[in-house]
Image (cartoon, rainbow, N blue to C red):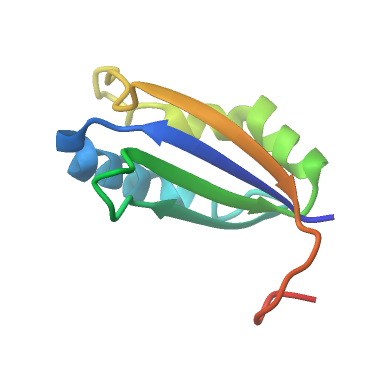
Length: 109
């Protein structure tokens, strides 16, 4: 069953461009991951919401855990070769986890 993981990141107001650049640079690391179905980085559109949401879809929990516990997650969060380690942009994060119960649209069943 498809699972969705949403990482709610607390991003400082002046760090939006940096978080977009970091996620854009890491997109290629997910392309060939077994069980990976999709990714979106959601930027808040209201001043009332400071969290950014990292939305990912996986074929099942096993695929997500294989990525999370393997080299995939480490590669996604690593600095580029020869680059000094960067400090995190996020001031905090909360992982929200779901199973898809009903879906509509081109990928829905």
